[in-house]
Length: 296
Image (cartoon, rainbow, N blue to C red; front, side, top):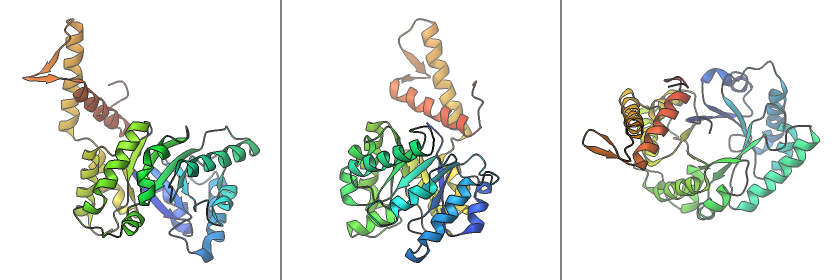
């Protein structure tokens, strides 16, 4: 799947940030029509993002181009889709996703719009943002509801409010939800993406949280400010030591195969399938980050 270490929210009502979003270097850009836009500015933001996506001279670099629409249950969601679906749009983030029906409904609307606009059906991917207790409990059904869906992600602020808790530095309020969403994503064969870290001045706190969720198994983390992108990339990019160890694991496995041995070892440690999978994932992430060539 595509590399999605970092995902930058860009307010849909900020022309300067929208036009320059490609220079920030995020793996994913998410032009936001929901939380960062007040009701009185919804129309203007929708039109602005729609025109931006249709303007082919705007360079988004290597970033995946996505939009967070408003929930389809609001007066804005369907109108957002009508305005933004076009050739350059690569994905849609659906907020407040609580059930598989939410995903299926969006899938059907997208299919209709792709057909009407002469686009390849299924080319626009879906990403479900889970922000309520009900959504967490339905995470697997959500994650497996559509072939378009490539990741599920947790909306930390809204979920914390729904739980009646408080976000703390130790992350305990969201710990169980993060685990459940990760389990659902892996069971469904899609990516798991983490929520934002709201204190843009606390780079150390962001780094520690990003490292923690990476070690849990998450594939990436959202950002609300361009300054957070480098920190997230550092947390999700393998170190030289990790890459070297992963290489040695794969080499030991290949040597064992050539020698006709069903058992591979690295030093005094046996290499089993989970160790190999982890090594393969590290090397794939290193290649995606440009640290290794695709041939290596």
